[in-house]
Image 1: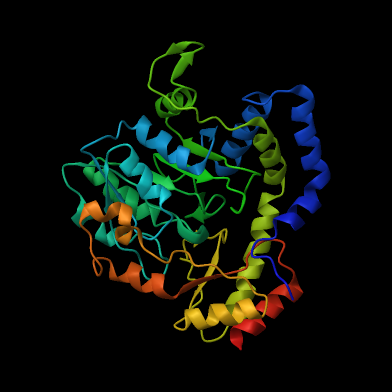
Image 2 (image 1 turned 180 degrees about the vertical axis):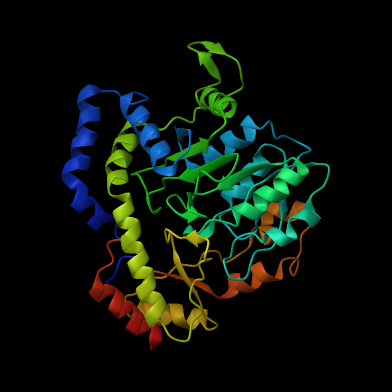
Length: 361
């Protein structure tokens, strides 16, 4: 059996008529940048997450950049984050000249461990940027309490968790600013790059809208140094269609995750905190014989992926920070045995049964 790691084609075929109409509507009107579809998407995203302002932008990475720029984070500042994530989180901190300060993760959730944050706070610390990994939010309640105590801002990197909940509140409505990604492989993905920023702060929202469009406060009048970080209209149209069915897809992902949980043997399955729900951006198990497992899965037609094989503190680009092997033992141990299995709302029963059989063998 040949299985897709994420079956984007099956999703497209299900919504094909509506998606094709949206794409051709943009082509017919030639409204490629900004416009009504962007406004509608932002309204839909804000309504879905329960937040006051949703601001569509060109990628999840640019969403992080907009957040840091809006908070005036710059050279000499420090931002606390996790070493167990995709590089964009720490990369963008370094890009604005600030210093990423890593904190080890919780061994169960793989998210940043709040109990280890305070010891890393200095007079240079300006923000905490937790990453809600694999579809489950970080412990935002604890993180927000720490931030309030030290007068810090919190930016939730929710690139993998849009649609998840923590204490019955949606991811992207849990902190001063939140960001997400609409990369095609995300639970809610477009057909290129895309992202969004979320906040309940009117002033921050206005500033980020100005920054993302070349710092324009009005046409040809520039109040800030800005970016070209606009989402294109075709992607907005596609996302508006997919968002209509997103909750149904989340429910289906949950069913698939539960089936994995109940039927996989001799592996560590994912843990979800009682206060949280996951959108299962990835379904990651832990195995001690990972290389052997990957070879056998590949031979049997079951695709796998590793998120993430080399922690950020050990990446060459961050050697200048002075971290060394052993500094974050939980992150390093999990990086050695984490393995992602196929996960999408369009994984069939027969496909999942086959995957489970191969893993258990």
